[in-house]
Length: 214
Ligand SMILES: Nc1ncnc2c1ncn2[C@@H]1O[C@H](COP(=O)(O)OP(=O)(O)OP(=O)(O)O)[C@@H](O)[C@H]1O
Image (cartoon, rainbow, N blue to C red; front, side, top):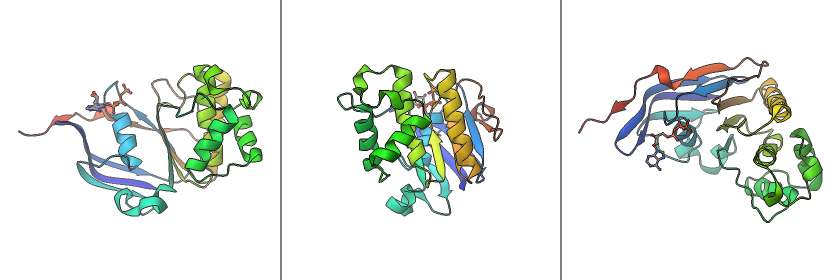
């Protein structure tokens, strides 16, 4: 599903990640680990096609992000640290906005079901600005329930701010995605409680960062 070869991630003159080879299979969940500032977000953004690798190649479902354009983008969903919800919209309107932006189903029924999956449907008419951090995270993650046809999910700290019930809801959405052959790469500073499938670990601290020669 996702393959990289000789991948290098650079910020300024620092090479954060060098010569990274990843191969993620359909139906797998991989926990991307590493200390603060190690380059996890930079790597996820690069895999999402939001930045360009300093070296190496990425293939997702056989295509390269920098060749594939919009067709390639349909193969993946990237949810970053930011929830990207508009404060002045209601929860349903904010999710509809995201759904339309990403070409997803945006009728009332699928939006309601998605919010139910993340246990936040009871707040569907509330303005986003009145939600707690954990509630906002649930709304942002509800988008995943609409992304059934995007095989690769790249999730940056998805469990951040979620309570025990929110974590269980997200685990269930991720498990279902993997069970239908989807692939998930996610970061978390806390140990994962996901058991189906048992996550593989990609530990960036196992590799030593290098400086680019002057
Ligand atoms: N816009 C930027 N310009 C230059 N350097 C940056 C920029 N954003 C991040 N960096 C640097 O890139 C490095 C990697 O940052 P990144 O956010 O990818 O790490 P991370 O592993 O996700 O960290 P954390 O666990 O703290 O979220 C850090 O050292 C950071 O200082």
